[in-house]
Image (cartoon, rainbow, N blue to C red; front, side):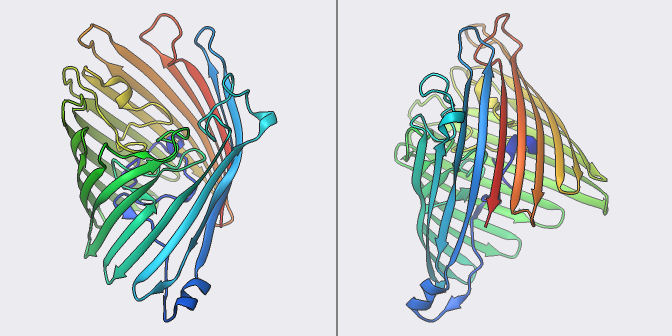
Length: 407
């Protein structure tokens, strides 16, 4: 998701401390050293240990319930900076715990550790060069932009093989680069590193940030698929210490390449009020019909305001007008956050006369302690296919619980 205007329904995007804002390559605070020896001796180790259970109670006739429990984490080493240069490498791993995981190919939920029940990857391996406000990074790395992002909501986050340059000036952040491959939960753990576009993806973006306004303008050339332009703006205002308001708009235009069938125009609105620990919010997205065409939400969770734990507008936007309305409430009590969101996704008749209507509800709980290093969280998602008179693959209940520790 676009982390600058991340979907305000917290329960749909429980994250575990390894993602960054949109338009930002993840950085570590560094100090300049004078020798190669010091560069490595004074390097920093960071990481994350996590365990997760995730299961689906399927409502469709003769379809098996699936579940899995996994243990894994993330371990990263980054050198100190020498004459502007630094390097880093990170491993990510996830392994199913057999006695609390369903049988492979029958009742196993493979979204945590792949269908093999294990997944280990050199997820980051890059070289960086920094000069004043300019930074260039080449290699495997975490990237968070509207249509290419880490989407760290399961066991394995997305990372990218990429070449990326960034420059900061006053309230502006400029980014440009090329994505070659990607891996992670959204790429499919069974596939490992896969292409980010047939011949890669060229992209560029500008982000502006001030006390009350944040705006993004991005362009992506996803080879042999689509040219995409993404725009958004978020306005926020704190009336006092206990009351604030927020409003946001977004627009995504995609033009197909080589008759790929990927073309879309999507609009979005978001409104939020926070008062005394309670946050109320509402979001709307509309996708206009492009005959015979589908939309593409990107390499990751996507930027749309209405994206929930599982359901996104892409699922019903093929060859039809479609819209999503999501409303939510959250309440913070010290270190505990309780959340609820209700999403209604409706598609008009396509060229064959078929309609779509899916409702998803998300109920969440998150508890963070030890300066937010330790997080315990749970989410219960309920999805219903309101268009069909019989149960379909869009009728299920999903329960996820996790424990995560950052160091």
